[in-house]
Image 1: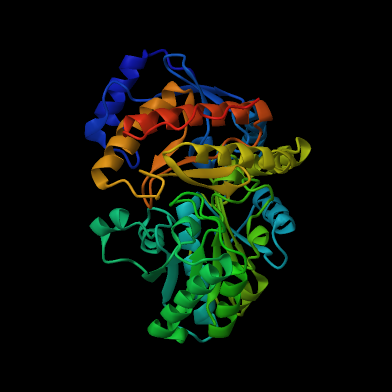
Image 2: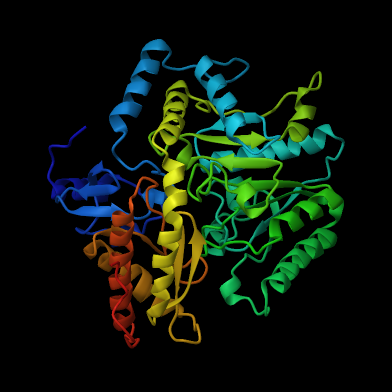
Length: 467
């Protein structure tokens, strides 16, 4: 649908009527970014300005904006066949076929699928499925979770309890789930001399928390294979294997939150095998439909699901629109396009080049570290060569004042963030070619060089550009 209203009229209506998510509404003025259309990896605002969406609109738009007609046709066909049916003690062909397809793509043993409408719902459903498993196996005392500092798992009350961002939680306490948080995997800030020592310290902390709380009270450990909040925090070698060993020893389940990392973001259908993970449960959303429809899912291992099939046992959780026929039809077409157009292969072929280009940003005085994998990268921003953190006032000036505007001027939508340390994240659509990736990094380099000058850092050299 194309609006006939001017940009100013739309901005005014947004100020008057639209409650935007995680937004300082008092600061919304005439510069509100209102997106009007998309093409390939680019989006256009209501003034006609073009931006490379270097964030895939919150890590969702794996296919960019050139497949709408094809995905819309799949939805239209489903609309004529069966516009809606629920999965409450019944089913419909499209959700059955999508569940079967996901089981084929999933890591071995994760054969059962529960559908939701998005990522936070998937995390909530995972928690309830985990609790159901423990209840059905005679362990009702397992009511606690372990998650990681800074990690974001969703804004609903259960997912928020698992989230490790204090500022998001304090207004809504007490938490819905008793959760202990352990250190994230930020190697840049770690004191250990090598990766193996770093990994040992992280795993030791998890075990200490298990023992402090009581091993038979822990229901699950939840983490992202590569943690988003904090800036694309990759795990050290052996971390996920160590978590698996602890889970098996003490009887809790492992949940991999792959709402962001699944469906090609790291160059595979799922990221867990890439990092050595063997989870019992995987949460999904975002790339499942490449954001062309709201949908999520929970993959459940046979071991976890088996007790739910006992006579008289009911899964006491449901979501009205979970597995919606239109969403399922779009998801099936999305997965078909992934294979047909070699979307994941594109990430594999270009991730080395993108990683090289991103790491070149370390030449800038404001960049202390660059980390990530696949099409999922972050640059950590620092005050000096010693890695000194920006204080609260400086972060306000840099991350919410200067950088958002400067990135748009550079033709980029990226994410300045300080839920952990100060970072800028990029996660471009998976259909980007080398030229578009270079365009993204060149624009980011110039914006960060200017940001360094804005913050009083000396520019040591011009940003390295693609040749």
